[in-house]
Image (cartoon, helix red, strand yellow):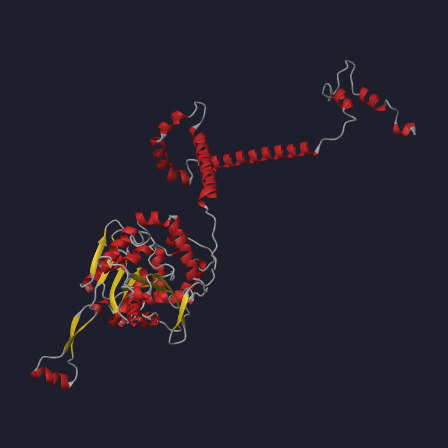
Length: 504
């Protein structure tokens, strides 16, 4: 067994045979014997050391690969005969000569050709890190989800069986000097009304304010085939159901003004007057001049122009965009959802908490039913044929000349004529910094409806004059209703008291 294994000094003898007479090892470094002997009993290299060695070797390989690629580029791409150098060499040399003064900021032992790409790369890397951090920290607001609130509206039943939801503010019916009906705009509800109006102001002027949900909005039932004529009749039915037997005022803001225009056209005998704020008209109105059309469309955002085009030509496609925005179940900004470009005052206003609170609550109520059809219908109403033009509201004489008998009668006497159009006042307020409904629309209305009273407000936008402005609301009511006289006295109750006193 000893012969097979060899004695304990066998390896020493074999090693001694490699040593010459001078004692120097052949092919073995000095100290190798001592190192091998001292570590013969130690454990093998640890896993962490192996990983470090692997990474170090991998880094050296990548570095060598980069140097090799650089050499290939220098020998093939950037030679004087290459296509790139022939085409871009002179322009690059001209640009580099102009910026050569920047080389004085580099250390003297650095080659500008190598140093500036490194500086540029580090700059881009730092800029990207800053953008990512800022987006993560401040530019991504928390997403708010919509909530459906319990029903809160009063309701009436219309002649066709539909129910209409409404809301009242101000003085009671038996003490109201003026009744004011306010149809809401697109993506809104009865909760909007006159945003920020004070009950004390309504009390001083004796105003009964009535707002209601359009068909399919809020808590009102949808209409199977609604148009502007049916919209005016719905308003009339609501007034009759609420006991408004006299004439009443109508107010329209933005796209809600189309329903106010319809009331002036289809039920003029019941309307005491109208107040419009940044009123809308059909953007494809054929009676508009080319200049009026150009001024109207030029400041609108491309997305908004697309929405009008789809509403006109392909209305069914609107449902896709609506489901991606306000029917997605998440709350957003009004300027993003409605594709609005806003003026300075409007930008400040929509960032205020009171505006955001009203906007979110109003949208939540507007989409309560989760049905896209009413919104598509409303968009189609705006860009389709209204069934009348604003010029039809202008006061004018109409004489009966059709038929043989009126013609024969006109030969011997004056023809029977009567005034046609809307005879009562129409007040229009327009912010001159309004980029949603630009002043060019009001200029068109003034041209075709010269009897309308224009109030052009400088430095005001689309929302700033109508939303949360106590002074503005006072001015508006003063113009419409004159000096505040308060609510009516309860003459009926006083008369009953006097009768009871006489009986005693």
